[in-house]
Length: 290
Image (cartoon, helix red, strand yellow):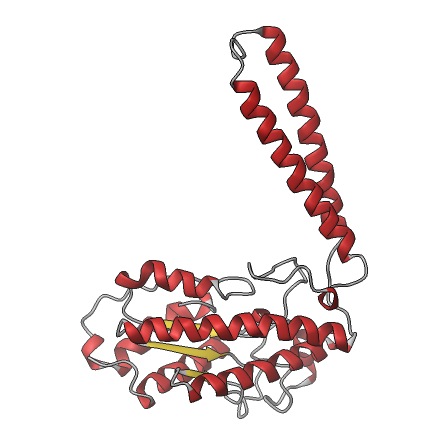
């Protein structure tokens, strides 16, 4: 299960209750929850563990497209694209480049030093090496400190937001398709769902208390844009016979508070509702068979 780790405790019970052939089985859930930008990592995880898994469930959402608040980037993230970054981002990329250069130079120095005769036996040579290492460590530490001071954060600028989301969406769609095709080829049952989100308009009746906990208008725009992309991607994946389904409307009849923060996370009752929706899809789409 990739995504919502809080679902796992209730999920095993619901599987056994709804699928009689699992009632006497021992079920072990492997938690592969990742914080953001989960593709292509989910594809790689499935590839690695393919022989050991019997069912794959991806629970995806806003953080798969809206990344950057904590410097999470998919490994294919196009660092060279100017539209994706705020004004000071190129300074940060320069610092990252310098950091890489310093680390490579020090690694070369260390290898060369170790090749010298008696380098490990001479007190003087050891002292010189120690001073060089100390200087290199200080440089690396200062670069890391500079990087941490320069957050790459999304802005409300529409061009910036659209560019970042579209770029992440391309990565997400390509590797989710590959993941689905891989699992189909190996006859592994799977289900990809897009979890509900409080910023999707008219998706949940919400009182003032829950709004205060769950709504941050500064992220509303880019989250809605991300969910428009996710909905389109899910539709295109279904046309290619991939089991991808949005769960945007499962809270429409739930006015009680379910969200616990301004991101997307749910309380216990919210996770029960989502678990029920996932199990219902597994049955309706005849995904999980004996």
